[in-house]
Image (tube, rainbow, N blue to C red; front, top):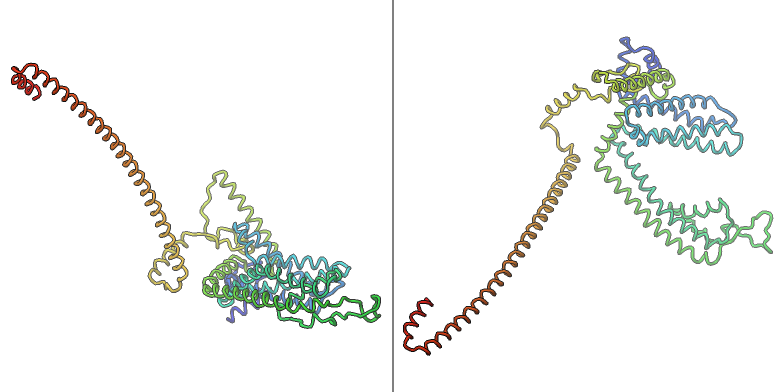
Length: 499
């Protein structure tokens, strides 16, 4: 602890020395200590706190309307260093191929909003008109608010406060979506309320603000029960539309408005305050419970991103980036030259060895970013495999409930998909069998028709043969009657023939 306190306290002396030389033995040891991500976080946040305190002092005690003050010069130097650090982050994200990840990070968005707001505020501050001065003051206050929110990034280090930032971010998204409904209800009530009490009001921005604020502040308990009375607007009973010198002629509340606005207010309170606000609280509670149940998962995700950000950072914090600017420019030139050389070697089939540890120049790793972070070395893969084998059977499954649940869900989805495919195959097989059965039935029907036709044909032949036999029998009877002596012989002959 005392070593860390000493390194933080003496970083303004030691870090400029490390910009010049870090090869000597004591300075090399200090460089290794300052490379620790925890120490980088502490020194960076110390720079943010110094900037925040100086900014607050400038706004409260040393704000000059006619020119720049000493605190302004100090803040401009710090913010210039801050801008250099942000530009360097964009260059590093481009070199690493992670510009999308950089753009999606809302902390980076806040950084650029802070820089733009402060720059515009200081530019408008140079104007002599009161409008420029007022706009400048508003922009500088906006930049101060963004800087205060930016300090919350230090909460990502703790397991207790890290998930709370996720909860706040999700609640803000829900509030923005919910305010669409709330705005419609507030506009309905405010316009109806003012139209009943004070019709034909004067059109002005102040009047519109007064109308809309009535419904908005009622959401927070500002009922203003006596607002419907005639005396609230100092209505002046005048003759011929004239007023006294000490009073202004203002519109009085109508009798219809006094009669109906209490019921309108009661209906608005029931819909907006009781129903919609409690619905918003229920959404907040649901979001809190969901994130809190998986707080460890969210915190580990935040911690991983936080660790990656400060692992690739250089040892020089934001308030020393101007001192490191020559080294940063030289490192960028070296990286661009190396990239161009790599493209030319690939174009002309020039062979280069596989990337190894510390393959980039020391100047790049010290002033731009740690290029070793993105390397996938063979020794690292071997160490990971060895660690996985050593820890086989020793992992506590309770620490991986979320992963196990996701695996179970994936397995169940896979089973359902396989069952669906089997059902589709069974249905196809059943359709094929039905088709084959129908074909067989059609063939059987055709064969039955053929058999019936053959049967009909055979019956007709049988009838024809019976008719022929009858005719033959008639002829034999006639012949036997004509020759009675040959009856036996003829009968026998006929019998033989018939036989």
